Structure formats: C-alpha cells, structure tokens
Image 1: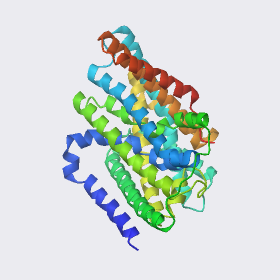
Image 2: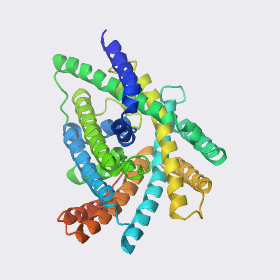
Image 3: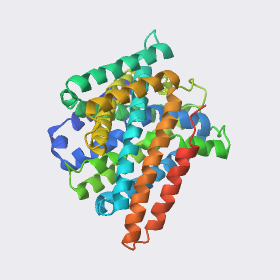
Length: 394
C-alpha cells in the first residue's frame, strides 16, 4: 500500500527542508516560524475533532471565521508594532503595562493547556490511557520545568525549539498527505461524509469564542523586537497567519468530509483515534510531534511569563518566583479542570489580552486621525465579549 510510504516520505522531506541550512539562514523564515509554530503547535491536535463533533459540514466555514477573527486581532498588534504602541502617553504606558500583565496571566493558562495535552498524548498509546496517569505525567513535567528554570534557567533547552518546530510541521505535512489520500479513497467508495451541525447558533457562537486559543500565537511577533526590525515582524506575522489559515482550512475540510461525528470518542486525543483509520503510522508520528511541540511551547511560554513578570514588576518579582507561581497554578488547574475547560480559560485570557491591544491601537489611531480607530474599538468590544462568553466543549 502506497499510503504509508507517501506519508512518511512527505514528513521526512518536510523535516529535511525545515532543518536545511537554506531555510535556517533565511531571516524571513526565522521570523515567521515562531508565530507559525505557536499558532498551529497545539491547535491542530484538538480543533478538527471539536469542530466536526459540533458543527459537522459547517466546520470549514467556522474555521475560516475563526482565522479571520484572529487575523483582525493580529492587524491591531501589527499596527502597534508599526506605530510603537502607546508608549508615548501616560494612558498608553498604563495600557502597555496592563497588556503585559494580561499576557503573563494568559501564559500561565496556556502552559497548563500545553502540558495537559502533552500528558494526554503521552499515555494515549499505552496501557495507562487514563486521566489519572495523564495528569500525573503533566504534574511531573511541570516539576521538571520548575527544577530546570529554578536551578539552571532554560538556556540549555533553547536549541530544542528548532527541532520541535520542524518535527511538528513535518507531522502536519504527513497528516495532510494521509488525509488527502484517505479522502480520495472515501469519495471513490462511498462519497464524502456530509453531517449537519448538532448544536444551535448560540451554542455554536459561545463554543467558537472558547476556541480562540487554538489560533493564538501570532502575538509572539510583538515581542521579538530585540531580534527583528518592525517591518520584518509585521510581514512575517501576516505570512504566518495566512499560512496557518490555509493549513487549518485544508485539514478541517478533509477531516469533516472523511469522518462522521462519533467515529471516535471526543477527547483531547480524538485525532489519534481518527487517524488510526487513515494509517497506523500517523498516530505514532502525531504523538511524537505532540510531545515535542507541547514541551517546547510550554518552556517558551514559561520563559515569556517569567520575563514579563520581572519586567512589569521592575525586578521586584524575579524569574524564579514567577516560575514557581506559574507551576503552582498550572498543577492546580491540572487537577481541578479538564483539558477542554483549560482551553476555554486560555481562550478567554488571550481574548482579554487582544482586547487591550485593540484599545492601544484604537487610541493611537484616533490621536493620529486615522479612521481605522473605530474598527480597533470594535475589535476591543469583540475581545471582551469572547472573554465573557467563551465556553468549553461539553
């Protein structure tokens, strides 16, 4: 059967390309890969099955709308990069401080999200596939991160990111190849699967609000000023959002046309059950990518949170104390909430951060007499609505 060689060959080719000196030397790719990896690093693991279970054939439209909302929030952040945010006025500085604290808080929840996914995928293909063991793995990794950050810092782990990003993108390439081949066979045999939505408009909207975190990550370009000039960060963030949107749309469309809801129990690892029908190698490839990507993302966000807290507290709260607080909060979330609830909490936290960024952009645009100010104010209202109304998958 040609499916397995094509999946593995495509993933291997992708890995070779992403790790090649040609790609690693390109400044645009270097600036783009951080937001791109953040956007699709964990979202593709959970988003497809969630949308398919609730919205069926309407999932690609919902995915397009979700990506559009994220792109508009990204436009506000790109405006702030270009215009320097609100650092020139007292109110602007206060909003910048609020944005920093809000993002630090969002990172606390996102790390819990990443590591709970890691725990679930770590046990998924073992005899210990149980929430108790998954949470135990998550707790252990939290403690490892705390120990490393407290004693040595994360410099020893900085080289991990380029490999985890390459593995993740390669796994996605293999997944899309496998789904494409499976879709062709499914259509030839029985025709595409067409399933109506199973929830009403209001439930769909609040679920949609609770999934913003799955397209989050583009804001990392805002904080790469020490490495890349503003124009490059703006262009690479825009490109990362466009590329991730195309990947998500192809992925979600193929998934909903190949699988009816209920073919696998809806859980954070549902993609493993579904892809077992496509190829026996895909669950292994996806699990390896999930473990590497979630660990790398959690280290990056832990570092980011520690840096933001130290900066915003003017050194009164050091990195190590921030790491300890983050780990304590993350372990508490791990044992008191399920992954879907953590996804909704993270979505609401990031929506609040995006609302603050939109307000900064709106005030800056209004001072300069730019008509786009009204659009940024509308985005701020949308961000607040998402933060209030977003709900978890039930």
